[in-house]
Amino acid sequence: MHTFQNIKETIPNLKGCVLTIGNFDGVHLGHQKMIRQVKDIAKEQNMPSAVMSFEPHPRDYFSHGQSNEKRLSTADEKRKLFDSMGLDYYFELTFNEDLASMSGTEFIEQILIEWAKANYIVVGDNFYFGKGKSGSVTLLREYEAKGFFTVQIPDYARDQNGEIISSTYIRDCLAAGDFEKAKSLLGHPIQN
Image (cartoon, rainbow, N blue to C red; front, side, top):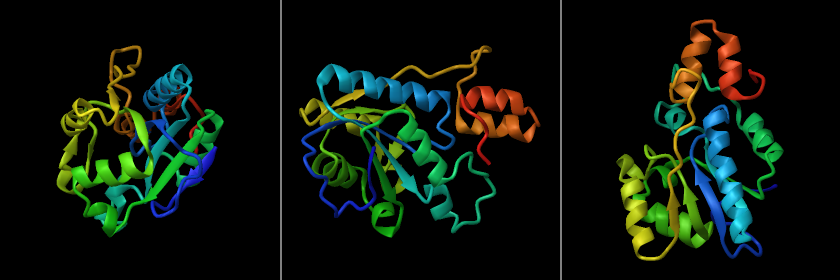
């Protein structure tokens, strides 16, 4: 897996990719389902698969490191989990003032189109990006309609009770002391 962290750095030989974007805290079963879809589309389209995430977590950036919400995975653990899934590229963007001040439109045009050269974008229907959450699936769909890329929204992964698998749900299980359930929702051993 090739890792890129600087948007000023040219990605050699990248002519397009199938990309998913998010924080991927814990790289849980819901994230894994999305990544499988990325890999399936990449194989069908003969393109590289890619994941884009942010360090520090935007929540930590905006709280100036004072967030009480414990992360399920460190940056290094997340990177190793992505690598074990056989992705071609990992774009680990430094979440800083430059990125935080980008509008949704700027993020799409400068990061997704110009830098990552995304042909397909796979995200959850609750995905927001850009300053003040100015970017959403609706904005991505507008760019899709203009022919810039194709947007895919997978169904949510759910547990045996029908609950949507999310990082928050897993943190709630850990807080309640249900480590076995948390581990089953992560799909891998608890890292920290």
